[in-house]
Image (tube, rainbow, N blue to C red; front, side):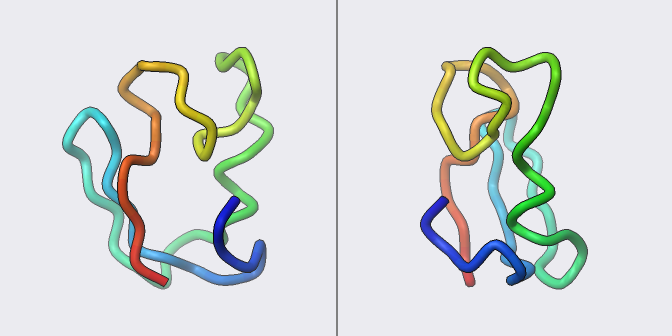
Length: 55
């Protein structure tokens, strides 16, 4: 992950969904059971890939 795990960045997902900054920690986007790698920070070519972020 390209940001501090405790930071709360704004995110843009491959699906087009945007998450406002300050809502979730960067570390909370890891450990997802439905993903091969378990992390939205690693591209798997699906809707939950993080394609852009703002610290």
